Image 1 (cartoon, rainbow, N blue to C red):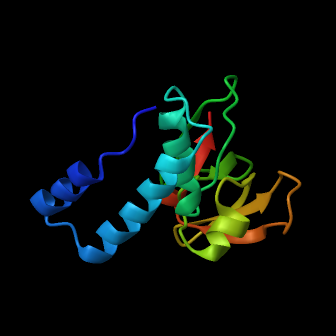
Image 2 (cartoon, rainbow, N blue to C red):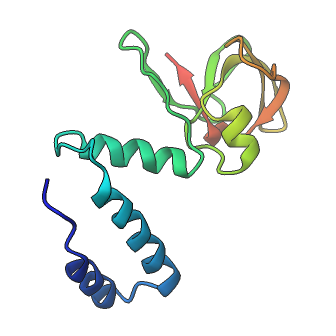
Length: 140
């Protein structure tokens, strides 16, 4: 696998006026990237995708080809619908640790919020947690 061309990277930063803090962090990541022995080139895109999601606290969701998930919309959700929290709904620690990717049933709709009880057997159990519709996906 070819080495990262740090001069080219720095030129990209100059051309796009990348902030110093961002550039410095990217240079550190690229140095580590360049040192990885496991990289073959064919997995690079997947490595970057997985790293990107996890570094932002977004959940990795194993897709089931027999399921069809669509963005939830206000007015389309009713009690007993199966929903899941979008993988990237929350960037905070609570989203990362407890919410993103969780599945459940709608148990109520209150003032525009969707009230969910988890059904995925993960802890902590979500019971009566309120979500905005834009943070959910609905199983159709």
